[in-house]
Length: 41
Image (cartoon, rainbow, N blue to C red; front, side):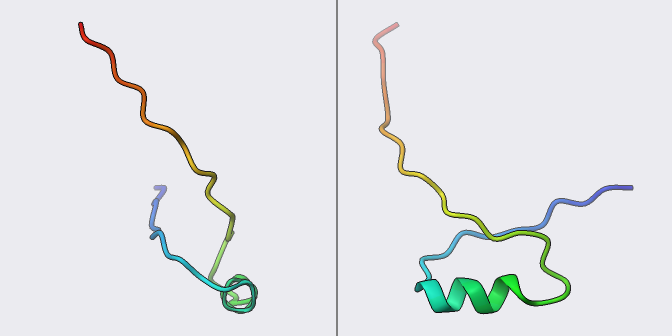
């Protein structure tokens, strides 16, 4: 069985490093900004 758990947060670099070092954390990564594109269809 596989699980996906997660959250998004705005963190300082030091905070992200501290969380990434936790033994139960698989990964911490920077989310890149995206622009919303809409179409009239």
